[in-house]
Length: 113
Image 1 (cartoon, rainbow, N blue to C red):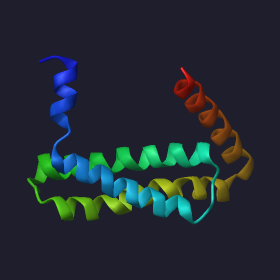
Image 2 (image 1 turned 120 degrees about the vertical axis):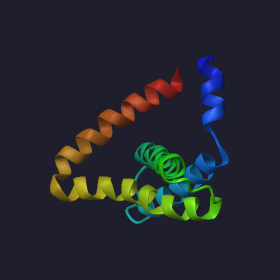
Image 3 (image 1 turned 90 degrees about the vertical axis):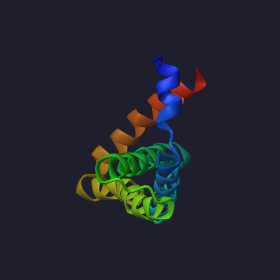
Image 4 (image 1 turned 45 degrees about the vertical axis):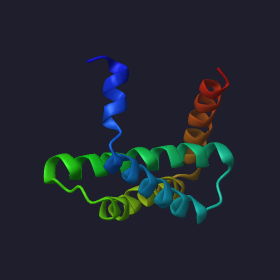
């Protein structure tokens, strides 16, 4: 099986609904703080990955195939990724700003390519 076909087949409806749940949770998590566009993009991407991972584990390990529960369970996983930056900002604001700048620069460089 080629890499492309493996990637395409891994996007089951359950994973897609998990991605949507992670997206909704990520939007909720970052909406509270009002980050700039670079950090928001990074956190939303992280939330989508977290939501899809939760959905895939629940589908493969526990056999949960219902779409709505997978979406609802993925929302807190997405929200957590939004609050992760808030927690880092509370612990060390200077370090959080450095991390955000470094990651933001990398993301923007990769998007511009």
